Length: 445
Image (cartoon, rainbow, N blue to C red):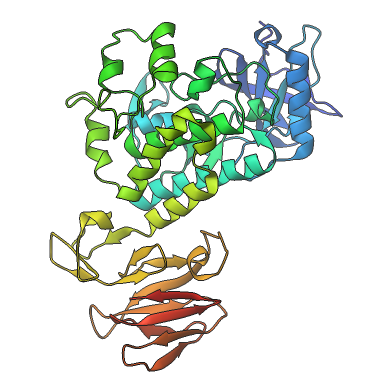
């Protein structure tokens, strides 16, 4: 094993040296070190040459990725390659993970392990998202990152919870372990992690590619939302030990989604799988339907797997489906009573109008936001806020829509009267009103 010594230096290709400051972690392929290079601190992922199946090709692929640049700022992309040592060992530098980001593995476990300062002891620190919006934002960011990667003609090949770091306050994302990313059609010996691999990879009839990425992406998203493996139900529970043959059966040849509408043999077990049992009914039907499709037809036919753009639309819709009631209740709209085109809070009977686009129904409450992807034709910008719902300061319960764009909108009142909403202005909302955002984007209340 070609370990590096703290205080030593390692040469970087094309000049200068990185100084080894300390060790950050280790794994089967090598060790991650904290280093300083040109006055900046980086993480150095250092490989053991004999642990790589095709080390020369693997190294060349990393170099090519460095030259190609990252497809998105969400990836902790390789920055610099080291020179190889006589024994063949080498590594690459990448940016450090900021301290406010938490591993998805820790989020799923609901805690992280931290060392108590000044001692050799450790403690469990609770980890959880601070809001429903942060959870959904994380899902959106994961989908967008892989949309950009796949658009670049590359696949990740080893999606699993260990590759994601998330800011639990905002849902912002960083994807690490980018060394396995390769152009479509290339593979350097990585198959993936059990439970995340597509069934055709488990069965050994396909190598990782964009299509298998899409399956693994659905697994990551399912675990993020439902805190459970989508294929781990009663059938799997009967396999006391998940050995290779059992993996092949339950995750390859006879994979059954726990909520497959046609096959109830692998349903989650009460008292064992309570997380997913409780959370499955929390999410709206259109989200449940998407995962049913992913793990039924999507298991059998890779071409039927949900593409990133569709996931993006679903999760942007989901984010706008969260209702904040003044009584403190925060739930998706399916947890509210829907009567006469209005949502009614079951806790306090407060009523909410909704803004209806073609296939999206957005609840109206103070602080709700509309994004450019809703109000601009053919736009998928899910970050730019184009409208904000405001409560009238003088008349409690009266809501208005503020125009955050540079365009003028037209509101048609129930009596046919047309009112303009100029940039920066707010117009009171009422049942029966329509809003013309321009270019045939019309919403109704």
